[in-house]
Amino acid sequence: MIVMLIGAPGSGKGTQSALFCERFAFTHLSTGDIFRAEMAAQSAVGRKAAEYVNSGKLVPDEIVTEMVAGKLDDLKGGRYLLDGFPRNLAQAQSLSGILAKRGAAVELVLFLDLTQEEAMKRLTSRRICGGCGEVFNVLTRLPRAEGKCDKCGKDLVQREDDSEATARKRLMVYEDLTRPLVAYYKAEGILHEVDGGRSPDAVAASLAEIVAPQLGAR
Ligand code: AMP
Image (cartoon, rainbow, N blue to C red; front, side, top):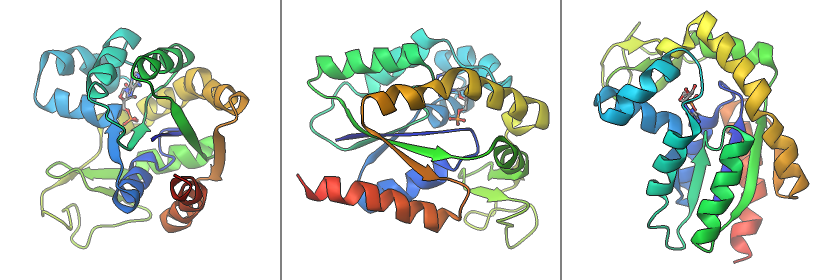
C-alpha cells in the first residue's frame, strides 16, 4: 500500500511520518531526509543537491525521480509512506509511471493543511539535533537543557534552509509548484484533508482515523 503525505514545509510531515510509520508499520521514504543524508555524506548526489536544498529551490526532477525509482525498485507489496515526493505535477506523473511499471499505484493522499503564517513561524523556530536529527522548537518544544538534544545530548542547530529568507522562498515554491497537487489528487478521488494547525497528537489521530479503515479492509 502506498500512502502519500502532502503539506507545506513546516506542516508537520516529518513528525507525522514518524508517528504514522511506527503505528502502522510503513517504510518512510522522505526525499528531504535522503538529500540531507547524501549531503552529510558528501556523495555525488549530495553535492549536486546541496546548492538547491540550501537555497530553498527544488532539486531538478531527473535527480529526484531517478533516486525515488531506485528506492521503489524492490517494492514487493510493502507499505510505503511517501513524504516530500512528488513536489510538482511532473514528478506526480513520473511517479504514476514508476508505480504502474511495478503494478502499483498511490492509494491514499493525506494533505496537512496549514496557513502560510503558521508554517513560517514553525520553520524559523525549528531546531534539529546535529547528531540524531530529533526535532525541537524554540516556541513549542524546548529541550530540557538549552541548546542540547534530549535524546543524545549533541548540539541543536538551525537547518540552513530554515533561515527566514530561505523558509520564505520554500513556501513560495510550495504555493507555486506543490500546492497544485492537492487539486490533482482530489480529482483522482484519493485526497483526504486534515487540519495541520493542531497538536501533533490531534493530527496523528485524524490521520489514523482515515487510514485504519482502509488497512482493515484488506
Ligand atoms: P523537506 O525536508 O521535504 O522540506 O525538503 C528539503 C529540501 O529538499 C527541499 O526544499 C528541496 O530542496 C529538496 N527536496 C526534497 N524533496 C524534493 C523533491 N521531491 N523534489 C525536489 N526537491 C526536493
